[in-house]
View 1 (cartoon, rainbow, N blue to C red):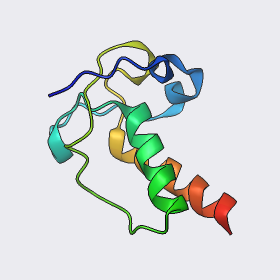
View 2: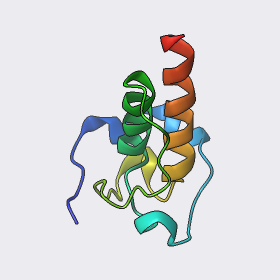
View 3: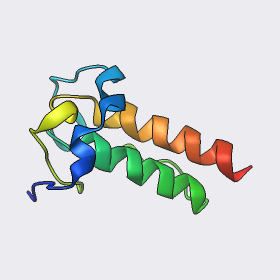
Length: 85
């Protein structure tokens, strides 16, 4: 699996996400920041929400370490819907 190297891994806002130690949706190390961006983009493009994020890169760095990628995706999706309406 690819490793995320983007600086978004260190954004403080991701500290608020719940931790995820499970192995659902492709693994516990999925970059929550990439998941947030994916949710935001899906909402802005009018796509249906996803539940499988296993195609996203992993990250064990910064504030996204062991954070819930699915919760990050949902947060991004909700924000995308809000700003697009």
